[in-house]
Amino acid sequence: MNLEKKESGELNRVRSHPLFADVDEAVLRGLLTERLAELRSFAVGELLLQSPQAGLILSGKASVTTPDAGRSVLLRYLGNLDLFGIANLFSTDPFVSQIRAVKPTRCFLLSEAGVRRLLGENESFREHYIAFLGSRIRFLNRKIGYLTAGSAERRLAWYLSSLGAGRVQLPISLSDLSELLAIGRASLYRALDRLESDGYLKRDGKDWTLPDPEILRNAYR
Image (cartoon, rainbow, N blue to C red; front, side, top):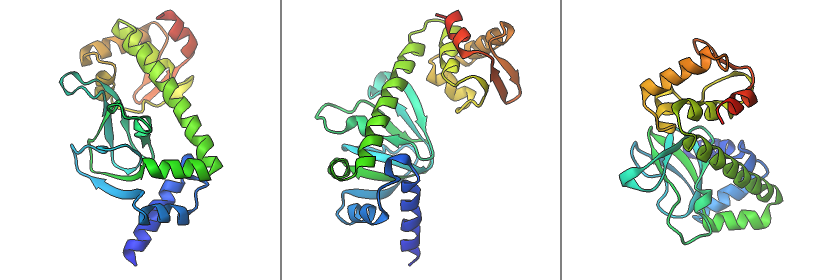
């Protein structure tokens, strides 16, 4: 009974994501029974995907890097209720990224066949799936923008301008940001000081304010 309650709680968390909001719990249970989906835990350092699947993080944290182990680039971190793996579906090409647990992580994994079924049977799932793909394209365009921006100040400016106007919360640590932008910690701190002294950024401890992200982006084109 406790296992059933735990599974039910986890499936409710799955359904709290917009992609699965209109998928009945009974349908999700059916996918688990048919082994078209699974609830699985991963240890630190373990790859979350080794076959084409879509996944949703229920707890923990994972890193997304380019697949080249010799020269991998951090793309982003995944946390609570983040989706992953969708770009690897419906293709025989090698995986476009590597996703590895950096904390003990619990996931809902959906096979390619399971995704096909939901796309065919659930209109809401289909619409949110398309919307998610669009958001990933926009994210990658932004990522290309600040990785190719040149100086540390330009990379930082392009990244910060994507967070919105007014008071913002940095979604990752400064150490992670340094790795994400592929610049050293010292260079990152100097770039932060420069943007602040130029009036594009205001910092008060953990409270950061971006007066006008568009002006910031234009200043570092």
